[in-house]
Length: 321
Image 1 (cartoon, rainbow, N blue to C red):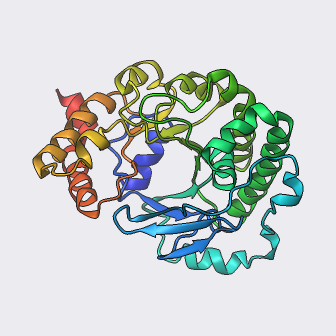
Image 2 (cartoon, rainbow, N blue to C red):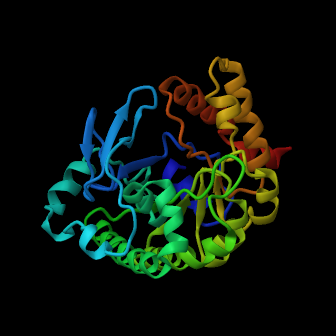
Image 3 (cartoon, helix red, strand yellow):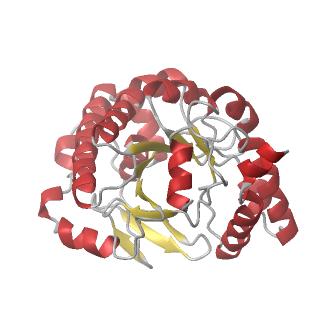
C-alpha cells in the first residue's frame, strides 16, 4: 500500500495499515503571496512586511511597521491582490515539479485566514478592538477577504488540483482563546463556513489549522463539516477530543510540542517516547495523522523516523493483539 493509499483510507474514515507520516506522505505548497517566504525582510501581497528569523526557521510580521488603527475607511486603506495578473500555469508548474501524485497526497497551506489577516494589517490590539468599535466594517472586510479566498481556491483547484486545503487562522494562546465564543461565532464562523463549503464544492478536503487553545470551537467546526483539524496542540485536552470526535474528523497532532518535542535540551529518547505516547493515545480507531508544525530540522528527523518505525503496520499489529 502506498502512503497515498494509506492516507486516503485515513481521510475516508477507514482503518489504514500504518500511522501516516506528516513529513513524508504529503507534497506541500504554501499559497503564493499570502506571506513573504524569503530570507531577510519582504512584503506579502497585502503590503505587509515579514522578517525571516533563523532561530524560528520561519517568517513573522516585522515589528514596528505602520498599523491600520481602524476599519472605518478600509475600502480605501486595504488593497486586495489581483489574482488574475499572475501566470498560474508557470507558478503551478514550478511548484509541483517534484510532486509524486501516485505515492503522496498534495496539500496547500492556505495562510492568513480572517483573524490572522486582520492582525497583520492592524496589529493584535487594534484587530481585537475593531470587533467592538467597528463591527459592521469587520463583517464587510471579512466578507471581501472570504470572496478573495474563494476565488483563490478556484485557481488552486484549476492549476494545482490539490487533495487537501489547510486553512490557517489562529484563535488562541496556550490557555485561552483570544475572544469569547459568542464573538467567534459572530465574526469568524460564517466566513470559515464559506471557505469550507467552497473547498468541498471544488472536490478538495478541508483541514482547519488553528494553533493554541481552541477546544470550545471544535464541536462547531465538526458540525460545519471540516474533514480534519491540526495541529491540535497539547494545551487542549487532546485525549478528550479524541474520545468525543475521533470517529468524526481526522485529528492531525496531539503531540506535546512545547513541553517535549521542541523543549530546549530534550533528548532523542524523550522525543521518541513522546511520539510513541501520542500515537498510542490518538491513533486507535484511525482518523489520525502526524502533520504538526515542528521547526527544528533535527527534531523533524527524529520525529519522522520514529513515526515511520513505531507507526509502521500499527493497525495490523493492533488487530493481531
